[in-house]
Length: 471
Image (cartoon, rainbow, N blue to C red; front, side):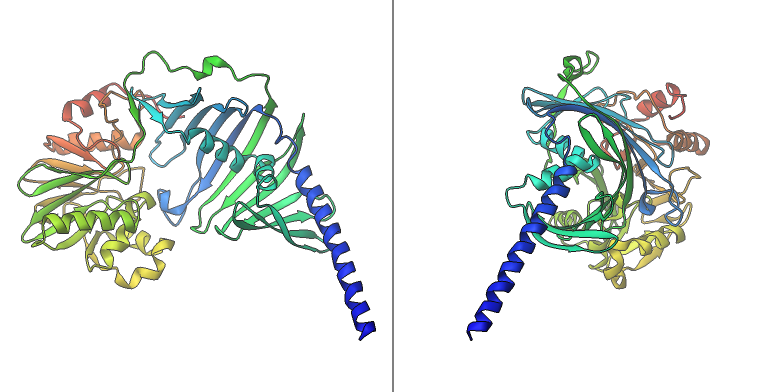
C-alpha cells in the first residue's frame, strides 16, 4: 500500500511538472503572437475577398466580392476612424462609407450616397467596441491578444506532435483549439468550438513592434469564406483629428435604431410593412380569398413576426404564396417559416435550385412546396417580370397591375431621403432601361432595401445624372 501511495505521488508530481511545462510553452506561444497588442494608437489597411454562392450571380459558380478597409484606432481615447469600400458585387454595386468616434459620439456617412444619401447615421455606444472587434478579426495579434487577456483564460490541454502543437484554451466563455507549427512556432489556425468558426493564418510579417499574419482566412458554419490580406500596420502618435469631422455637405442626423415593424395600406388590397429586419420592406396583397407575401428576409424569427402580424390583422385570409425577387441569402433566409406553414414558394427553375442548395434550409426541405412562375406570369393581380440582368442569374420584380406599383429586390438602390446618389450600378441601369423599353407605367416602387416609396421622377433623375462605371 505504501509503494502504491509513492507511485501516486510520483505520478502527480510528474503531471504537475508537465502542466507547468505546457503552461510555460502556451504562454510563450501566445505572447509571441500578441506582439503589438499593447500599442494603443495604430493604423492598418486590409483587402478582403469572399466567395459565397448565395450572394453570387450564379450560386453554383461564385466569384469573389471585395471589401477594402482603412482603420485608425486610438484605444486610449476610445476613438477610431474607418473607411470601407465594398465592390466587385454582381451587378457592379459599389458601397463606400466612412465612420468615426470622438468623445463618445459615433457617426457613419455615405460617400457616394447609395445607402444613406446625405443623412448621417448616429451610431450607438457600442460602435467603438464593434470597430475593435473588426480589428481583431483582421489582425492576428489583436485576436490572440484578446484571448490571452480574457479574465477567464485558461489552458485546458496541449497535444504536441511532429508537425504541430495543438493548444486547447478557454477564453470569454468559448472553447478554442489553436494549432501551431512545431518548428517555427507560428500559429496556423484557430477553431472556436463554441461558435463553429475557423481562422487560418499565413505569411507572417514583423513590422516595427507588430508581428502578424498578413493573410487570414475565415470560415463559418454556414459555408461563408473570406480571405483578408493585411498591410501597412503602423504605430501612430495620435489619431488625425481631421478624420473625426463630418463633411459639410451632409445633413440630417438619424439614430441607428432597430424600429418596430409598421403596416401601411396602399390600396384596398395592397399593404407594405416597413422596418423589417432593420431597414427592409415586405409587401403583401389580398386577392381571391388568400394572401401573397413578397419578401422573406432576416430568417425564420423575422418571418414569423410578419406572419403573426398578417394573421392577426386578416385572420380570414390564409397566406397562400410567398415570393422572393432572387435567391440571395439576405432575401430568402426567412422562407423556411412560410414553408413549415404550407405556403407555396413562387419560383422559376433557377431560383428553386438555389433555394434547395442553400445550406440552412437542408433540414427543412421536406416542407418546401414550389409554385412555378416565369417572365410575364400573372397571378392574383400581380405580373412578374424577369429582365436580363448582371446581379443574379434570375432576378425578377413584381408589378401590381391595378395599383401600378412595383416591388423590387436589388434592381434599384435609392436612399430613404431620396437624394440622388453619385454612382449608379450596371444592374440599376439595366432595370431602368427595361422599364423604359416596356413603357411600364408606375406611380411607386417599393424597394426591398431602405426605401419603400421611390417615385418615378427620382428614378429618372438618378438615371440621367449617373453615367460612370464602378471601381
